[in-house]
Amino acid sequence: GLPAGRAEAGARIAADKERSPTKQSCIDCHGPAGNAPIDAAYPRLGGQYADYLAHSLQAYRAGDRQHALMSS
Image (tube, rainbow, N blue to C red):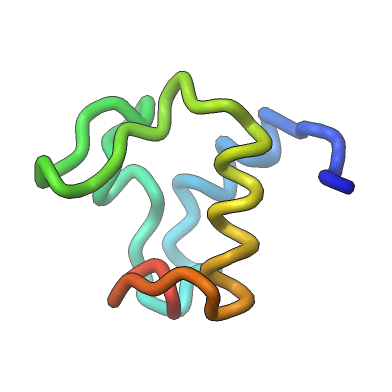
């Protein structure tokens, strides 16, 4: 049920602050490669399974998972 991966499009979106409601990008909190979070409480995204990331993002969108920045 998950969409096929599009790594190049994802990399562009991860760095695009203008499309984000918070005007922050993924790399602002998780680091350029997803492995240098600004806080130890933030997860490392680099190396995670694509289906885990997709399900997590879908849960934020649905309101089933909460975080002050991610939920918006």
